[in-house]
Length: 306
Image (cartoon, rainbow, N blue to C red; front, side, top):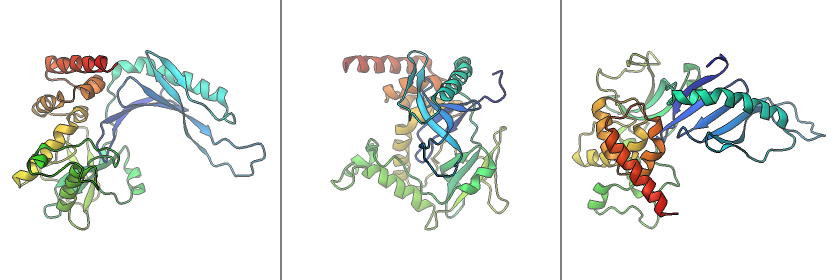
């Protein structure tokens, strides 16, 4: 990219983990995408005020201006006429001028190297990834947070292990029972006070505490995935395995070891449409034939619904 004011990077979508967001920045606009195809265009602008407004100037913020893709171009959303629409169009044009060639570089490198992890109450080892950010200065802006397995309105997580034990996915009161069981399992491990810590993941792969008072993870014990697979109880391990299988298409967006990537690909193809939506952003593919079969299956399913 020629303009130094433009930046291309990605950040993880966390709590719950929902994949990786691609971000392209220019001086006055940004483009966001979760699949590398459809981009939400946001433009930096003053808050619009009426002709007789007596409110003090409150600074600029990003406003959604439209959606863009290579195939369909820009589809602008309705804009408040009090905005300076001409400036917003100019900012969008400059952004897209840089974004188009940058698409060849997808996926963009991860930039959220500071991570907040829920910790085991006893050994203080990382259990679940709560949040991440790009700079250490952002850490102080975050307050307390509880780990969640799925969005409140997402009822799609079903654990085969819990069903075998007779635990329904919907008990008539809670339509996300299995997600609630997952949350209780993870939170219980961190104890009553929900101990957490911030860590810096360096480019060489090492992970160190951001605060000198925090205990660092033991060598080789830091989870490769956003949720540890190190559980003592066999039933707990089976539930965690069901959850990871459910999130496998999204977890393939991460930098993974060859062994873990191969395992997750075998799990992910059970969700062919998710794989077809995300595969362009996978940093690597271990078994291209396997994923191609899943993509073909997804296209057949989509065609049958038309």
